[in-house]
Length: 97
Length: 391
Image (cartoon, rainbow over all chains, first blue to last red; front, top):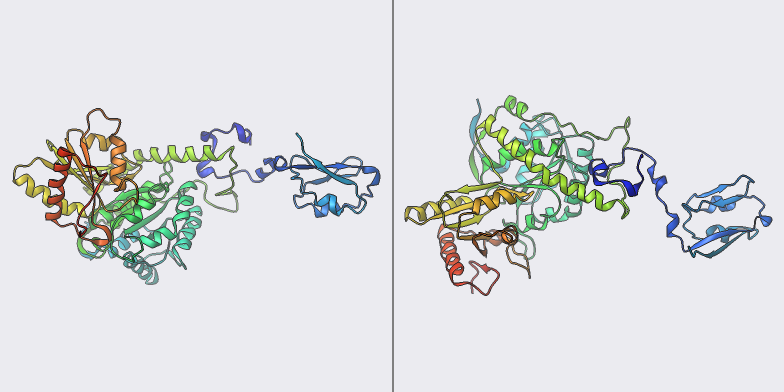
């Protein structure tokens, strides 16, 4: 999509607002639903990847050092990863931004 | 050569759908629409119409099946009435919002309770804001003609909207009338094949009826509104070309003996033909009365309507539906709104009558006209009057 959602005028929409380009749900920012966000103490991380498996949003990716981290564009702050982490790497803090 | 045959109007609608060569019929039988879909089921079963007939478990499913069919690019027809139209209510919005050109005949019927299978316009008025193009008809020929026009209008790539064709339940659906059927070849020339531009196909996947957050929803709705308003141009052109091809002419607002008329009666549907006989009688007595009817209900024909009532002093609107606790007649309420900003306008008087299949006879119409003139002159404390209810 050439224009972002906020730039599209009513004239830009396809008939019936049909979506002709598959996969554009990736542009939908679910991160702003969040009231809590994840913080990490990677010194405790054993890189087991359980957080990634449990994440209902599928938004946890491995960073360059191989640690697992939530993508804040999509993370809704549910805290499941923090609860399931066997070594307590993740702490949820209030989202103040 | 076209042929004239005597036929029940419901059956004639089925024949018109056959002439239009519909691909899919998904419908649930409900009085007084049943004979339409019964006849279509028979045509499909006998191999006379090469279409898929989908028997569904409810009207909600009927309209949902129609969405899928139209989305695949098939010429799609259904019919319903009264409670059935109400049961498919939420899906009606989806059809128009997704811009799917379904054609639906509505044999107008009163709504429960008390249970009534007979005709009035309560069902239509409950769906007036669903975004469909809506056409009213007064006799069998008009329904047949406008069923053909409805496919062409709805499927036009400038329009791509669903179309309802209204006829009065029983008073029109169940009567036998002489109908002039056009030749198949002439219909084929008038009605080009349906070419839905974004039809579902594995080679070109699309998402229909998707999710729109607040940042997109208003744009989608405005696009829909602009499109429905603009459809009038295609509707007018279609009626013009129908007139050229078949010699019968239709307009958004139909006028009868309105030239020099000081008093105008406004009706919709088949009771208009009764009203015409009253206009004839009163004209014979030298009274300057005329009749206007909405043929096109959505998009509302503002310009044509204002033009049609311009010279009159009094406009008497007879609704066959009641907006409870509101302005009385829904049609009159829209009429008042359409005229509110005009400098020179007739005095508008509102009557509600003919609910649940109650007849409005010629003498009733005459009484309504006389009472309407009296109200226009002396004024009234009421928004509207109900006519014919026993005190």
